[in-house]
Image 1 (tube, rainbow over the protein chains, first blue to last red):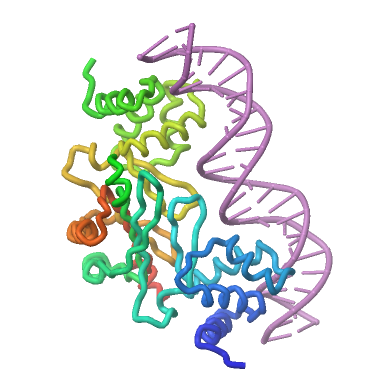
Image 2 (image 1 turned 90 degrees about the horizontal axis):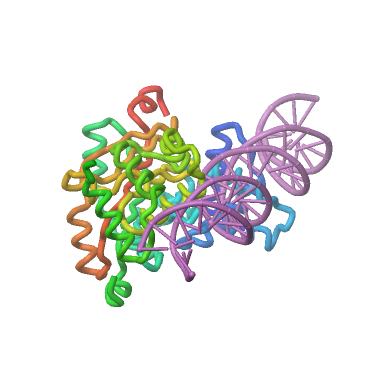
Amino acid sequence: MKKNRTEELLKEKLREKGLKVTNQRILILSALEQNKGRHLTAEDIYELVTQDHPEIGLATVYRTIQLLWDMQLIDKINLDEGCVRYEIGHLLDGEERHNHHHLICRTCNKVIPFDEDLLEEAERHIERTTGFHVLDHEVKFYGICKECMKKGK
Amino acid sequence: MKKNRTEELLKEKLREKGLKVTNQRILILSALEQNKGRHLTAEDIYELVTQDHPEIGLATVYRTIQLLWDMQLIDKINLDEGCVRYEIGHLLDGEERHNHHHLICRTCNKVIPFDEDLLEEAERHIERTTGFHVLDHEVKFYGICKECMKKGK
DNA sequence: CTCCTTGCAAATTGTTTGCATACCT
DNA sequence: AGGTATGCAAACAATTTGCAAGGAG
């Protein structure tokens, strides 16, 4: 049984806080890890996890997501759909850094991901001028997509 | 009776779409205009507007907000509080441009506004490479505020 | 006079909570 | 053993919707 870095880190952080290592917590983080790149809602995660473990409750998913986010193991994305999405934390996803930028079309509501980091310099500037230590950022651009532009308006 | 630019623009856009100019719509936009700089929830707006016009319903506030946002007369801000906030559109607020950047402390949940435009260049880059026409952007920085840093963790 | 719009109340949806039981350590 | 976590169901809160009545064009 190979135990990966993510799981080890979870256990470590849990112990650090005197919290317990439960199967549910491992499974939920693992579901997020195996779906790297997708943006999952609580409901999505619930469905993924209950495929193998139907006994797990939705409330546990919500509580665990909250916990994982507090521990900075997962990232939060809000695309104004009335629900929040999550994915494995950019600190854990293997690559150097992975930020969440999205172009949201105000005409057709399409969401276009845009992966390029624009705010390295801005973060340094904030730390320097405000003393706020930046861990992560989320950027949304609202506008009109190419297709809707073409169709006029 | 002076009629300001904002109200005129609202009327124009409504007529353009064959929609009706109602008192409720004027009042709600006006409440937002008079509270430039504050970030108002639907409930906030409802309370402001019902002070003078108690007959207006909350549902109308929601429907009108939606409409004003579609017409790009107001801006949307989501600070992960479980509700959405609005303010008079940056295209209407007199100044050149006014964007919504926030520093959100992951320890104490404080929200610190940060008014400085960081993404002019990024927007041009997006337009060039993707054809997406950017109208507005919203940026959130998650991290740890100066005070929480001091208190250690 | 014809739709669009409103107010009200009921319905929805995403998320949180209380509590008895089950489980880590 | 002892406190933490879980599952379930009920509670909540923000937002949406159906519908009859009112109002703008």
